[in-house]
Length: 200
Image (cartoon, rainbow, N blue to C red):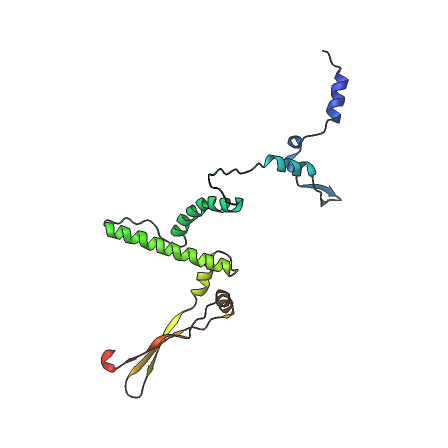
């Protein structure tokens, strides 16, 4: 059926653009230059918001478990990513790189050591999360690494020496972290150790 070209031009001019026809570079803000200065104005574009809601889609999980809430299912599912993060933690934060052992007992010992180190790392992570300190143990460890112990050796009048292991004083930031964790650092460790000239 023949169609007048004028009608086609009129239809093209009056057709509303779809989200796919919109300019991607002008999706968020509109900008123009005025008197040599850049002027930025912005406005919400409902077309893009509606198109994003329709095109983003959903993540579907299929399971045979009953009685579980969607939140519990999702938390269990993302444990796969947490397992992958565990290997990255062992290689980076804990520096537990694979080592070529030649004896089975050494292999088993390395596996046990790696597991215990990661278990302690996760416990510290959960502890920090419950205390409102985030879930990154590395900054906390670096902060507490500045707390040192020193052996103070004091001579006595009878020729003997007493050795006392003392802990350095904490600064303000360390005291805040210790308070959030409910910890208290002692001023000294253990009992004083006495020695004579023959034991030096």
